Amino acid sequence: MQSPQPFKVCPQCQQPTVIDAAVCQRCGRVYRSTAPIPQVTQTFTADGRKPSTLPLFANWCAKWGAVGWSVLCLAGLLYGMNRAGQHIDQYRGGPGETGASIGIAIGIGMWAFIWLAVAGPCAVVYFLTRPRGS
Ligand SMILES: [Zn+2]
Image (cartoon, rainbow, N blue to C red; front, side, top):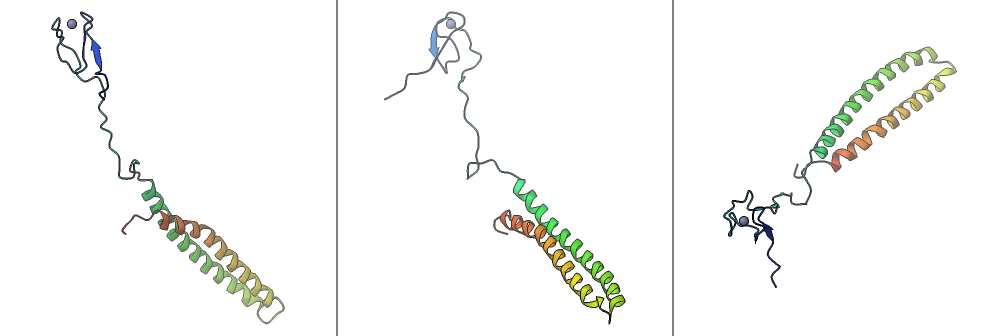
């Protein structure tokens, strides 16, 4: 079964003509367009979506965010331990030594928690958005 042929009407003589006719068969008028139906030339990627650079950007951010944050935390931890070590010397041999040690342990634990809270999601994003085949 064939669908009815689309047609256009000549603006000069009102004669219906086939849609892809270039010249009116009755009055000889030259039509401006011979293909009024838009051709679908849109291209799609294999998965039907437009290629996006967002995953690559997120991957880059996650990678360098995790690396930068780790370096920052490590530097801060070393600095903090150095400072705490000086304090421990003050309390060494006294009743405050145990308390200072506990304080340092809690401080390092909090530091590790804060580090993990940022580096963890970064690592997850990094592995999720990692380009295939690399
Ligand atoms: Zn005509």
